[in-house]
Image: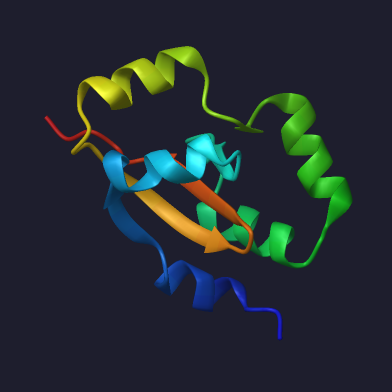
Length: 99
């Protein structure tokens, strides 16, 4: 059964980077850009919406973590990120910083 957008939005969890690192090392971690809705991207992945997913990949708004992101997260392994699991992938998005 394919989840609904509202169901996925309710499953977004804040997790620390050190928990996500093994998923990155296995090549299963994808970063969703701040301008995209994490639940909507997860739904497109779950539904195998190739056009949407390929568009985000081509635009770089859905991508593997880059060197700068990894350096920031490794420097602060308890940094919280929003996460959704869409087997076999783990989608993450940086949490907005509050000042």
